[in-house]
Every structure is written in C-alpha cells, then in structure tokens.
Amino acid sequence: MLKQPTIRIVRDDGLGQDNPAFVIDGSYWSVAKDGLEGFDGLTHEVSTGEYAQYDGGYLLAERTGTVDRTISALSRFMRLSRGEARDEAERFFIPGRSYQVHVAYAGHERFCEGRQYAFSLPLTKGETQTLDWTLLCLDPYFMSEDEKSIDVVEASKRRGFPFVSCLERVAPKPDASIKDERHVAGFVVGVIQNRISMRNDGHTLAYPRFDVRTTGEVVKPSIRVLDASGAAVVNVGMDITMQDGDSLVIDFTKRPTSVLLNGENASAKVSSGSTLAAGIPVGAFHVEWYAESGDAALSVVPSIRERYTCI
Image 1: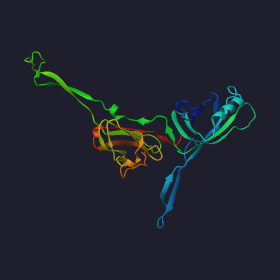
Image 2: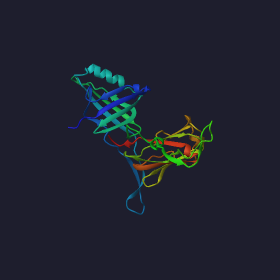
Image 3: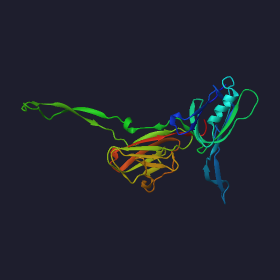
Image 4: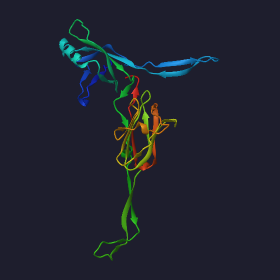
C-alpha cells in the first residue's frame, strides 16, 4: 500500500516564514479516499484548422488554461474533536487569499499556488469531520521546491603559477650594492567565462531569472539562451551603461517580464528586438552573455524553477 502524500498548505498573509500553515500528513488530518482532484495531470487545449485540398488539418494553437485543484480531508477524531477540527479549518481557509500547496509524494516535492475558490465543512454523522477545499491555480503547473542556479564566479576558480625571474633585484637600503641573482615571483590567471550549461528536467517550459552584477563599467549588456539544438530561445539586451556595483534583474517568471536596474523599473531600456515573453524548453541549454564593452566586468547568475504537469 502506497503511503499517502504529505501536504502542507501555506496561506500568504505577507508574514514571510511566519505565514500560517495547514498540514495534512495523517497526524491530525488525512487525505480522504480519492480526495485529490487535479493533481494527476493537465488537459491541454488544442485547436486546428482543416486543409482545403488535403486530408487532415494543421495546428492553429495549443495552450493550458487555469486549473482547479480540490483536496478532501478527514480529521483524526482521536486527536481532534469535531468542534476543534471545524474551528481550525474555519480559521485557516478564508476567501480572498493566496495559498501555496506543497506536496511530497513518491520521492517528489513540488508545489502549486493560487486563490481559494471553494470551501466547505459538511455536516456529517460520527466523530470525524470532513473538509473540501478548492484552489484556483492561474499557473496550472506544479513547480520544483528547489531552484536551479549557477554562479559562474564561484564555480570558476583562479589559478596561480610560480616562476623564477631572471632579473636582478636590488636589495633595500642601507646597502643597495647587494644584489640577488635570482628571485621567485609569480602571477595569477583568472578564468573569464561567459557561458553556462544547465538542464531543464521538468515537464514543460521553464522561465528563467537573470541576476546581473558588475565590477566595473559595462556598456549594453546582453544575455542569450540557446536550446540543445543551438537555437536562440531567449535573447535580451539592455541599452544602458552599468557601473561598478550596479545590479540588474531580468525575471521571466513575472507577468509581464520584470526588468529592474538597482531596484527601479528599467523595461523602457530594453534593446529593440529583445524577447521578453519566452521560456526554456525541456533538456539541456546554454546561457551566454556579452557586452559592447566591459564584458570582463560582467557577471550573470541564471536560475530556473522547473515546472511539472503532476506530482
């Protein structure tokens, strides 16, 4: 018999880590039999057109719309009385709030988020209280709990090489006539890298975020993402000059895509021809960045949160 999923529902009250939570893990509440709807897959809307002179048809569009997800749960009457169970549920499930549903099952840990759509506490006989709760997910996909991110500055180490100098070194005063025939010196080589390889192991497109930092003047920075075939799926440039310590965040997870320069909206400074409504397909991909000048002072940290059709 498979172990039931562990569900942790978090209500967003703007309290950060202190937001209230409701746990369904078999301790005080358990998932009812067949008590999860909308957690096992998605329905895609596909529209087609018919050929006038050929059999069959052609694809016009396809998309995945919003989805309702319903949880039916039972209270443990040995742990909670009917009154305690009703009070706990009534305090937590309230309209007009956003919720995240975190699910751990079969080695997978994923979450979805949305708005409360329906809630009921049926009046039934016996000691066990049941509840039915529905979440309207505007983004229909589940997301990975862990965010994939690579900082190329931390990943690329510096290398040092000692060497023997053949130049004579004059000794410090007071006796400047004494000379060393040889001395050991050295130099350090820093690896400058502007390409990162990553993978999207989810079920569908992943939307990236790019955290850009500078250690000097950088003119017109650009970022490009290439899929496994080498095709550019994201290409965004900025008509700006960044200085030492500036921060640029380009976030494709936002609707619309957010572009912040030192915390201020910089969408108007995006270069003509940039893609601001794009995602990264499943599989391997590469992130590249460059600038008109100063690219050695440019550092980019790309990150993605993988998205799944089910738990």
